[in-house]
Length: 134
Image (cartoon, rainbow, N blue to C red; front, side):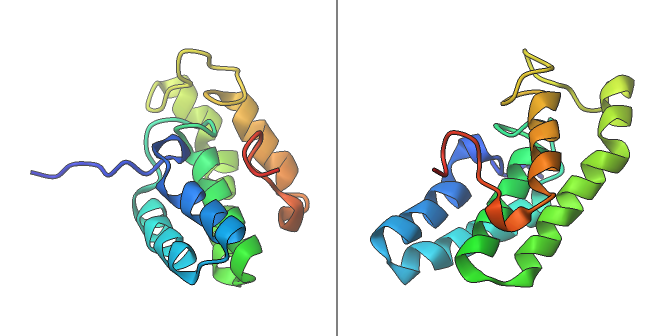
């Protein structure tokens, strides 16, 4: 039986591990964050468009790792998530193939998060997940 992994920001692992590596300076946290981000990259086009449990939040996982490691691979992943949303986000929402959560226009569940990501992609090196990466 195939089941989806919990791959969104609200599920914790990738973003929390990258932040733990930054705070504690432990390489193991960063390596675990990279492993979790691999799952996000492979399985991250699920559910919604927002930043809490959606594709926009998955882009922030890649952006966090890009800042932490300087590896362009993570920047390319973030750009791929953002490009997918730019190209297909509103089409998928209007067809009902993806939903905007209980608050379809909000920052965390809806298109507000998608818009925030698009603004952050203007200068990805300065992008921060709102309210978490201060």
